[in-house]
Length: 396
Image (cartoon, helix red, strand yellow):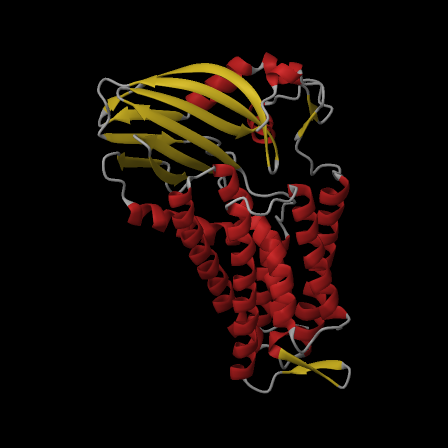
């Protein structure tokens, strides 16, 4: 039996989302540059799991990284990282030399902390940075940078779409920084498969109504659109609250708890589609679970360690970007779902089948996150064994 084009398009959208879904947060590194005259003191925090994937740190292949394995590869780590970072004062390149390396723990695991120093021909009025870490390996990787000079902080985000940027140190371009965080917020939604699947699981019944113990087609587009607006607005309000609280350090929860709770929220939302318990006020479900998702959004900004002034700008920009990213998903999903709501294919293939697929993926996530499980063929060595000596591990 052939399917019409809206059905095919919506099924393809669900397949694209569920297919590459990963269990952990997207890859990020954290670059700090302190500019003092001609000298730049740098620190670069890079996830060990990313370095293991790029240059192979796990010598014995047991899926765990020991201090001896990491220490033995310090020269290779420094060579790999600094060959993918170029600093220049105007058009004149700055000479970069590697320093010591430590281990630190961010919200999503162990990171190497690479210290380095750069010497520029002259004190940079304009600092040019070219960042290409993990280029060609992970197109989703982002480098979150902060540049400090005379007590003022400039923040920036590097990635495949913005590998080279120039910064006027005397007068930072706040508007450009804000736009960067808007873009990062939208991108974080689009590559945050757990957030997308949670949103999709709430949107799937938006073109239906629960009556006489079964799902039936919604009578008009206006009612469906209002339902979606309530869901998206409730989710946005909720995650904005906890994102702000977590980013300023008012509330802090372990990353493993947060990621597990997010996976559980997706499971419960998908189950509610298959066996409805809450069907009249799903915006309330979006609000309650949105509080949990806000902690997930906060992990990136919290790890960056921005000062209060820059943090406020980052929070607003990031929230705006998340909202725009959600609206883009709704703009694609809702018209397609509404166009095909009358047919059997929507309720059986898209609604039931899509919810079942989301349930399966999120159950795998929960197992990986809550119990630290790794399915064969899906794991990347990311565990840092507890054999590190106390004098070489930095804690904050």
